Image (cartoon, rainbow over the protein chains, first blue to last red):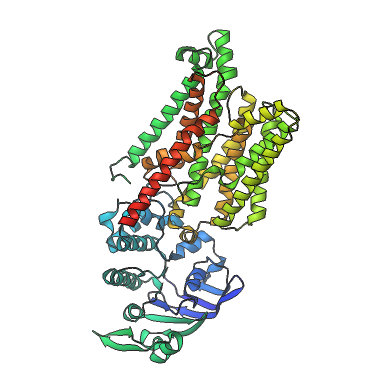
Amino acid sequence: MTADLRIRDLSVRLGGRPVLSGVSLELRSGSFVAVVGPNGAGKTSLLRAIAGLVPHAGLIALGAENLDRLSARARARRIAYLPQGHEMHWPLPARDVVALGRFPHGAADPDRLGEADREAVAEAMRVTDTEAFADRAVTELSGGERARVALARVFAAGAPVILADEPTAALDPRHQIDVMSALRARARCGTLVIAVTHDLGLAARHADAVAVLEAGRLAAVGPPAEALAPDCLRRVFGIEAFIGTHQGAPVLVPWS
Amino acid sequence: MSGGPGGPGGTAGRRIAVAALAALAILLFLVSLGIGPVRLSPAAVAAALIGRGEETALVIVREIRLPRALLAVAIGGILGLCGAAMQGLLRNPLAAPSLFGAPQAAAFGAVATLSLGLADALSFALPVAGIAGAFLSVFLLIAVAGRNAGLTLLILAGLAISSLAGAATALAMNLAPNPFAALEIAFWLLGSLEDRSMRHVLMALPFILAGGAILFASRGAFRALTLGEEAAQSLGVNVARLRLLVIAGVALGVGASVAVAGTIGFIGLVAPHLVRPLVRYDPARLLVPAALAGSCLLTAADIAVRVIPSTTDIKVGVLTSLIGVPFFLYLILRERRRLGAGLAA
């Protein structure tokens, strides 16, 4: 199940204030898209609108399907959403948290998973390298381990679109690279992965495309080298950056 | 804080724990039928239950003690279930069924009828007014906080409603036509299962069952809420609707309980904690064991008030609070230690 995501004229208002206005985007299945922008630019609102968590105007379609016409369950089978911060309130075993990814498929009880659900959970834990602590309580895991469990939960959903809100925040460099690589590997399997990040370097290095938001509007979209061009960085972020290449991949370091 | 794969939380271990709790509840139920001014042997109780044995024993067991024991099981069960559901919804181990004001409003409904002299403490009008009070609190809550209210707003509105119900209850006592009525109200509020009849059981049970069914049907959503409201919503859970369902389920179940038995505190808070390690902290699997633990606790407390020698009857609601408060303090201390450890780490 792969399809392109079409967003047309998307607007979101929160408490009467516009946070997104007239955003239009076409995102290909199988690509890894980074969404960047200054604080308050509407990045999280964009993800939440796609996930159907905030009221919005405009069209959001996956392939031929208008997502807003789907039930919450059906939408959840197509869009897997990883919110910021990886909230975990009870000390459930990591495996049960990953199994929650199958919730939209009707698998509410991690002890009674069907064949497909069990396989999806096992596969997600394998690619995120979380099998070793499958039985440990998630609240006792380190930040990096918890981030991988959260990622596994989203992978287990088997959704054609994954939305991740700052998946690398508060992680050390090793875990940042691991998470970005896992997301990119997922995209290579045909999933559309959209990740919000503040790390322009990670975005330039790992993403196939970058969407730059500024004050609720789309400022630029395209391959990292185009979307993160010096004039755009200057205008949107007010920064000068070192831009180069290393091993054929773009390198971007915010400088002054 | 959790067992290993083969630990007490495994599927088999959990089934055994639930079966043991159910067996304990049945045992306490049978003991409860045998305890009172006239002690009856288990054999005599069993004989009376199936309609055999001597006439007096038959009357004592079936007319006097059976309704009391049934109410203890049903009310204890729904209090435990409501506590587990509230803690699941709020993702907070210190949440109690009284948070949204339904028990207080039910108590006010019952007290108002007593105060107005519409009913004596054991009549039929009392539970009706109690349940009406619980429903009124739900409508008020939704009117004040709105249908799509967040938790903070609901908790604040619940606080306002329970304070209002408490003040109205105090006013009803204040305006009681005579000291006897005031005393009757005061004693009724303490919470008791004494002298209840099958009519009370039939009155409360449908509401308790309906409330329990609503909460039990939401169990999967409580597990999804482990990830927070936003993630749960993205998994297809309608969180706003879930909140209303839990509020309605708790009002039905606890409202009916308060309506026939007065205020019985702390079981809803304590029961889920006793069994949470058995289910490895899973908020969905917690519901049934929490209900069973609640049944055991209230039945045991109701046996204790009959066994403890005293010149005046000790009300079962007083006993559950006396035991419950130290346990609540222990929970707070444990939470403090946990937070302290978290800061040190």
